[in-house]
Length: 192
Image (cartoon, rainbow, N blue to C red; front, side, top):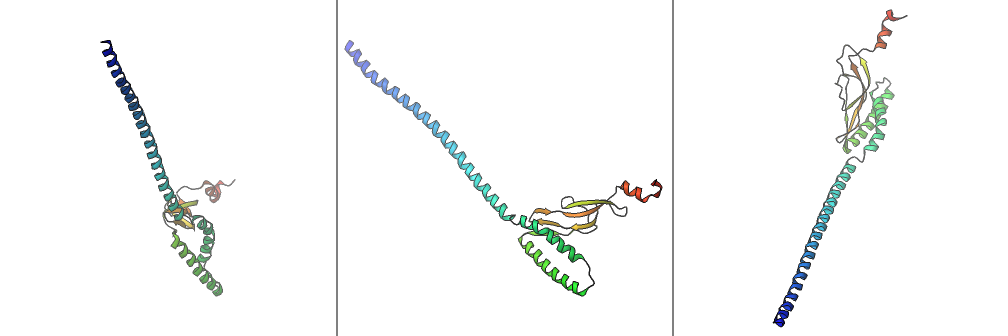
């Protein structure tokens, strides 16, 4: 009997060893599957980040192409303002009138070329209501004959490039608040 017990023990022992090895291998497989899942998750995040970066780069390129002319136009606006001021003057001399006609021709071609690139000049007129989104008030003047926040003088018009404000119109607006310094100058009873 003792030999039979030894045989059974020997037969059980290899089975136990195999079961232990199987258990260890299953644990190792489980660890590796967890690790694969973590690496797959990291890969998916990096892939998503790369896709987002591509999309952002494409948006940046579109923005750059759309607004590439803005610095050039900003440098050109003072010259266009001078052109406009010269063309607004009325002259009697026929020689100067001929020059102004030529200047008007050149000015209109420059404006048309800039319009074809996306520049838009918004004409502001005396009597228009002040718009804080497209105008810059250089001065506020009391005028009892005009409603407050009415444009009294236009120095420069508003310029837009596509949907972006390049330069607001520079205007003088009316106000309903009297300036005390002007009151004292006009009233002789306040003189000492």
